[in-house]
Length: 214
Picture 1 (spheres, rainbow, N blue to C red):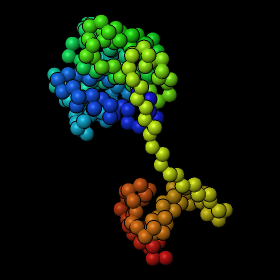
Picture 2: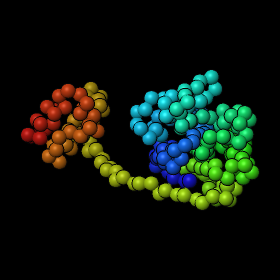
Picture 3: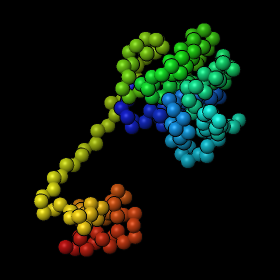
Picture 4: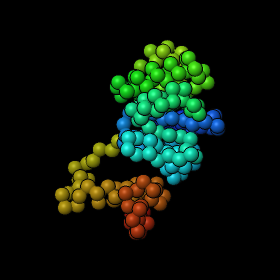
């Protein structure tokens, strides 16, 4: 699977695999421990506590239980697990995330998982995801279809400042941005949106209404 950054590969694909395999586990392989420790966004139930249906396993840190079905781990931990359980009993899918960050552990993990799938577990699903890697050689190696997502483009407004609009050193950029946001809210005849720099503070509405009155 190839999709641009932010398309939802890490959060959507593991959850979809869980729904399609209600009686097994899904292992999500990450290239580093920092990414493996943050699998909460991939939970089907947002905000689920780690160690419940979603957990992670890295070196010297295990947040899983008997109820855990989606386990994020590093490639090194996967290699240790496949040595202990060569047939990956109870595992329905193995997802290789950010595979463009190639390394010896990642290549060896994919080779072993493919061997298990080819020789013993034809029901085992292997998913390789990346935003930049050329997927054609991997698709041939896995004998799998290629799935691509073009992502979404959002409009960006570019506004150049006039010399008299530039903030002074005393005023500062933060206060200027807040005032500019409130002025745009007033021009649209709308209240401040959650993205307004001052909307989270008390008195944000009071900042906007005088600007609107002017």
